[in-house]
Length: 116
Image (tube, rainbow, N blue to C red):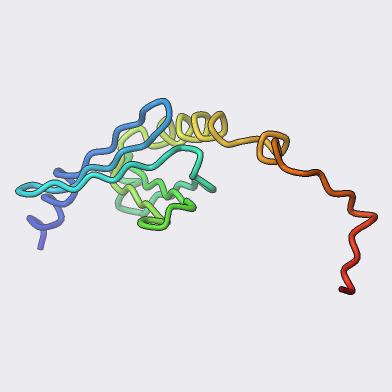
């Protein structure tokens, strides 16, 4: 059981790029998941008792990605720095309200009839 968990942790890699976050898992066969940073909705971190003893932590990403809506990264060193980087990169890539509605027809809420 310990070897299985060690292999799982030691064969999982996370790479942060300007526009995306890539997860690579596997030893014999490799699976890569590419997540656009604009799809991250929430970033949180935690420390279990064991992680605290070793100065490690866990980061959880909640996304609007259909294939992997929740990404959990456990046993991370310097996880607070990574969490801050992820938050900074994701907020830069997330569209503002004005950008999200660019090119769409504006609606005046006073003229919308909800009784129809």
